[in-house]
Image (tube, rainbow over all chains, first blue to last red; front, side, top):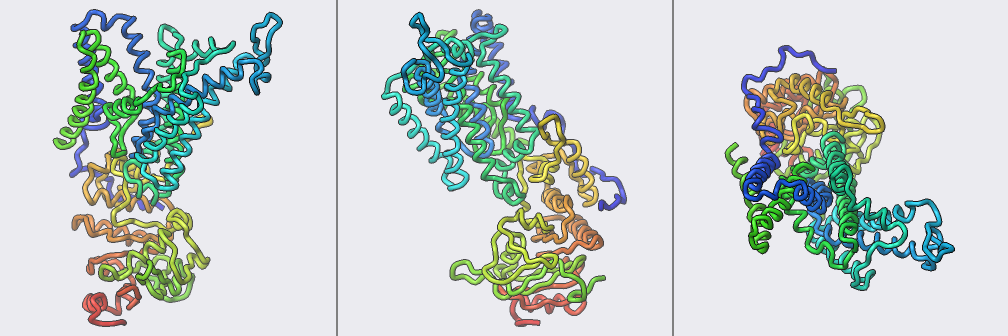
Length: 360
Length: 254
């Protein structure tokens, strides 16, 4: 089929881009990572406590609390969408998980006799497999996140509503549902398996906080999915040119629903982890976290116009936000400055990228 | 040399194709036959119905009236992917490229090559880059498979869009203004590619405003005006002057 070449292809008129002009080194993620390293060095000189093991562990734990949700939102942002409902989903999933766990661990409650019974000593004992209560309650929390994601995806991809408006509405709906099911009271995971739950969500493994390990595993998985699977390729293509993606036969509707589901699941998982750390799921938990999450993604190089972003950028953005917060505390700066500085950094990060693409 | 309207199966046959958009009649009673290995030029002024006709054949929207047969079988396309499945490839005027992806990624968009790694199917970057380089070589385009499309010239983008049609064994390739935005040297390359498609028995429909290109490569020219087919003549039986007067309406039909 292929016609033999008369002459091998030559590149006399087309130069090859140098290594620092392409890929990671030329991306916003690259600069922001550089800025982060500089910040680490500066902080090290500014405060002797900064690089202590305790503080680094603290930073690692704190940024892990928004970073998993940031991975999910990054997926959505790459396609040119936005998800404002992540904060509400975090709260709702956490709440459902802890309420289900409490419900099915209390003998006498409807459905609970599958899972627990009162022991001869009057204590609650696990009736079935150990871990089953934990599994069911976490799946319940992720299940509601899945439903929220499906509704978001359906409204945006099938009905064609704007992502901003849909998820803004969902922010309010899900937060409201959280108040309805809890009656405005916080709930906390309890029962015979609550200790497993706390170990899984706020334990320490090999000197590292457990959420940090989940984050690393999920980030690596996300990198593989984005760059080495057809699905990831389609996510980027939809962000670059949605019309072209549809014309080349990419199932745009399906991919979009899938990314909103992924985003909601990430937010739900994040909420469940935060719940374990706090020891409860208050009804106002994670309020306005969606803004931190989106800010972190944007600082890390996800382009709100679509087509760019990745897990490394999401993590770098989260670390930068946390190091600044931590640094301002260590430097004894009035903590009210924190938000102002975060705003400046969002604009500066995007501005640097803008200037670079002008110059190139 | 395949002459039009002679024996053999037509690759594409349209009968009485019409299309209305609300009160606007964009196409009316268009009949058309294209044989394998035939290059047909589709000409007409803006608003003559060329794009509507192309979009109907490409499956972007269904016709309001008429019948479409491909390879002798009646076909109804609900989506562009249905048209591609039977062997119709289109090079769109705006090229339908994703700027943020590489040339190779764009060529293989929607039909990526995969390799199995246990239960997972991962993209085969190497094979896609190699095949894309081969296709760019056939097109004599100095395009690197790993370069991003947003950094490319108009001619390179065109090459990427055309390379995409060469992935499958298309039976009909429609090109919407492929020579409108590229350099003189690259026009030659595109025209020689059309010749190569023809040699392989692929039918080509060239939508163009450029008279010299149409007369250089086409066997037959079809002129559209006000949503109707006004002429369908072998190139040897007509002249640029006659085609121009058909396009403008100075001559009603031929």
